[in-house]
Length: 143
Ligand code: FES
Image (cartoon, rainbow, N blue to C red; front, side, top):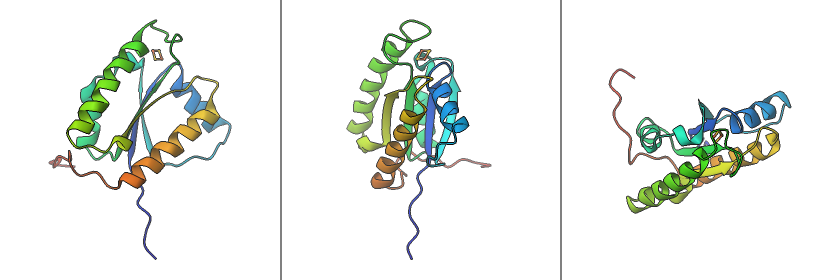
């Protein structure tokens, strides 16, 4: 039997909403794919686009950015900046030949554990369909 490809997903989550939503999913014992490696940041506005590129270089098959819903950022406008920045980054990635399904953004609040579960399932499924990502992979000396 052929083994199913299990993609590595790196998720950058803001501390106040999406990380708390993911935590709620965990404490509520919701089942979701274990393929996601979470990086907690204070706000999506803190996420440098190079973090995303770096994640791909270090072996991610998909990257997810998630934060507070528009209008609910704890730093007022961080997620508006992030939304603009990552809309552009996605188009740039696609321009360089990266499959659109490898990069996703979503808004998940602290009370949306079930939504977080769905966002993860969707991101994993899309990365699985896109297949292993080698294009940006950098040889990591000593890893
Ligand atoms: Fe959550 Fe800014 S604090 S996106």
